[in-house]
Length: 317
Length: 220
Image (cartoon, rainbow over all chains, first blue to last red; front, side, top):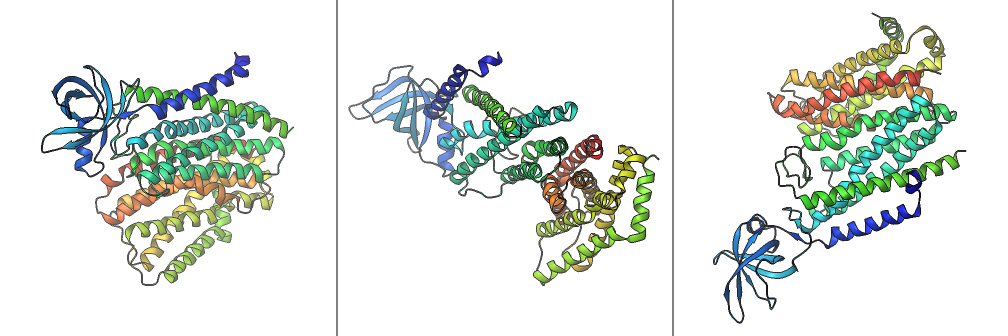
């Protein structure tokens, strides 16, 4: 089994899976409900919103105008006007950008995005197309947590067994964890630029991830500043790593949820996919893609960690 | 009590030299003066007030408590301590001594802030004291273990603030938020419940981990 994880076939497989899942993340159309169109228009967020709908019947047809009776993904019926030469069959699914005409109580299809799509993602109000970032940003933060957890486990193993391998592994896992934390911060920051208006605004989420970066930077500083024998250096670093991990659950899970934050999933905002109370509608396709990405990123982390452990061992021989 | 010898020793040294307390009080005095001079006659809001208070307290604790293990190394008494006392005794003794030092630091900080700032007006005193106590316990645990770690390193200089401050930051966030609320309302419990829970669980986690890990740092 371990031979397989070091073979080229495994690496190619991992690369191919990443390519497929990235394609799925970007190519899958996002469609909401007719209710979303009305609320987003009323709140002056957007005039046009993509909706996923199913054609039930053709209600009126002329040379220029076609009205269809459709239902959206929650089964809400509506009449839509499609000014297009596309002819739709009964039972067709389509994702189309709609605007609402309140006087006639009709939805006007501005642009048809996809007819009979294989997969669709749900529209998350206030996120829209930016919601795709979640499929990268959230797995990266997850893997950062997993990496720090594994680094702590290695540190404990080192303190128990005093084997150099565990010290190098803890070091490597923390490094890759720091890399994933940085990636999560960068993706989050780019998302914040388009969602909140600036790259950095000291939201509680941003503050806590920044503190996490500081803590693990202090760990590497400690490693580089210690001039003791290897055993003692590794022992002190392992102790600091464990102390650092004690703060991780507070910073990643507790503080941002208790303080007022604009970040999706905080108190006061709706969690699109993962929430403990199960209040919001959790879309199965979105969660499948998300959890696939978590798995893939974890495998990537494991590969990088192993590689870096080998490098550290060679360097410190 | 099995902890008393170390604590008694430290208290006796402290009473003889008064180094810790006087350094901490001096630090606070200088900090408060700096704030007063850099913002003369300024109306300080509740959130800035609580931030200034806790920043002074945390930095004061870092200056005052950093020496607990370094001084043992410098005097060369750490070997004797290792020979004569169990690691648990040393940890709890130093921990309690640090706790006492932080408590005295907090009391002098409250007196100074109340005396110098007219905006320092605590509305819910019981909750304020609860936050102070919880903050002191967590800070004491983190600084005890990390100052022991720094004392073992060859380069002691600026290592403790660099290592301890990021780990203390969750505590700083929770306490500043809670204190801001006690400055604003007379019945603060509803507003600060989350912060108190964080402080409480953080204190327990940090104290336990420090206690478990201490002998790994302490032994040769």
